[in-house]
Image 1 (cartoon, protein in one colour):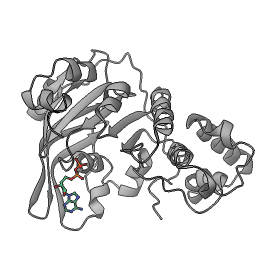
Image 2 (image 1 turned 90 degrees about the vertical axis):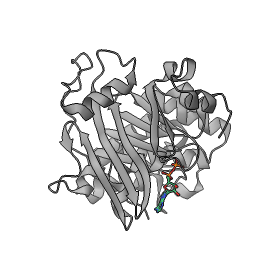
Image 3 (image 1 turned 90 degrees about the horizontal axis):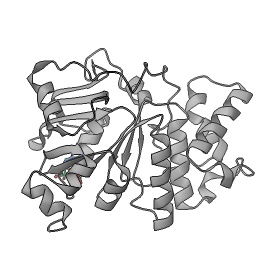
Length: 294
Ligand code: ADP
């Protein structure tokens, strides 16, 4: 059973006023990350930042000097051929890679300026702030209600009324409420695949994360369910910062504000999605988005 989606409510995020000026740039790596962001609006505020991130699985060098900013309440898509390091990078943002033996990270990853790899950071606490939705829906074998209430409950919230409110709010945010409101006591396993994935998103949202990582969340779903997931991403980005791994370029073009193109462990290009898809700077990016290799 994966419990990463089931953490208790995090402290409310700091003031995320969109009109705030961009953060000061400190250090050369930071300048590199900002410089690689093409057309970031001047009012954009970065939430997470990777600086010179190298990642190794034993001797295998899976990520090479990644510099990338994740902007507040925006959808950042990571695209690139299979095996180029997208999921590995995604997992560096909530230290999910810590669970892999022999894995090692160099460089730094910060969230709101805090080094998430500092010894003082508790990975479980971090994963409350940075929730994750996986490729295959993984509802727990319990009722719809209990799935969504699971995270708040394991962290001590037992008030029936409050739990009911959280469950309703989360299911509404995940665009599932109307379909399940009369059967929340029924098993989550009876839902369709698309509904199960929206339930998993509701389960993540129930603990009010600041950042939501989505690793190909629609790749196992039919086109209609995929559309629903894309629609709900657009809706929740008013409140959440989303990083999306997708092998589906059309999906990246449709839903994201920023796109990073990974190739063989390197971030080849990063910037406003419109720019990446209309006027890529690198030939490799252009070849990839034109479908010349996959
Ligand atoms: P993508 O998400 O772009 O498909 P991944 O991040 O999953 O790529 O993988 C990047 C590279 O790291 C691949 O060569 C893959 O085989 C390797 N890799 C991924 N996970 C592990 C692991 N747990 N142990 C060893 N190598 C891994």
